[in-house]
Amino acid sequence: MTSAIIVAAGRGTRMGPNMDKLFLEVAGQPVIAHTWARFDSADCIDEIVLVVRAGMENTFQEIGARLGVKKAHRFAEGGAERQDSVWNGLQALDSGSDVVAIHDGARPCVSHELIEACLRAAKDFGAAVAAQRVTDTIKESTDGLTIAGTLNRSKLWSVQTPQAFRVSIIRQAIGAARAHGSNLTDDTAACELIGQSVKLVEGKELNPKVTVPGDLALIEAVLKRMA
Image (cartoon, rainbow, N blue to C red):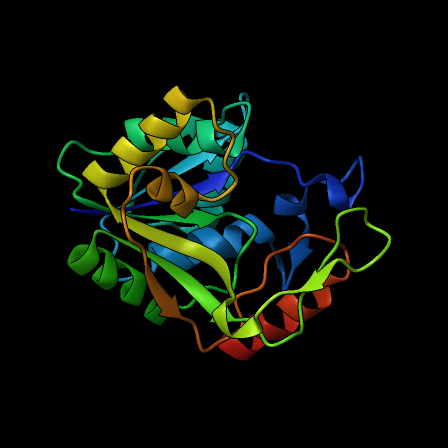
């Protein structure tokens, strides 16, 4: 069985103190509705686990009803940090799940092709991540005021989601991170802790994340192009 975990328990403080980015409307639907719909309509996904904040399950049920979602889905409660939320999502997977794609709820433009490519790579290599080559010159700063050095752009990749794994591997990796006391914002970093290599899956299309208000116009344009 192939599963998806959609992490939808955060608020996103950079959007402002009173704004929940997942429920901002873009192209006629809340951001999270677009994300859920992408996975619900993906042939390669059998079940979906949505990780949500405590007390929000009914709100998500209503969104699912409006979307008319067809795939089996269940909810898990978000944790204090993203890593905890992913762990809770892993515990909610069907016992028959062997491969899982973990995705940010705030990335509503993910394509079926990218989801499938990440899952296929995870089956072959154990772990895989959607990524794009860095094209800007990246500077390092130790004080936030001046440049300390220039990083080698040819070795740098910007990772996104979905991040896909064999379930046994990501459970081991996140478990190790929790035992180590690490607070990781990226699931592939947990794989690094246990020495698990991660396959880069280069995305060709825009896969932006809602982070600041200015992202919404770009995301709306991408969604309309995908429709």
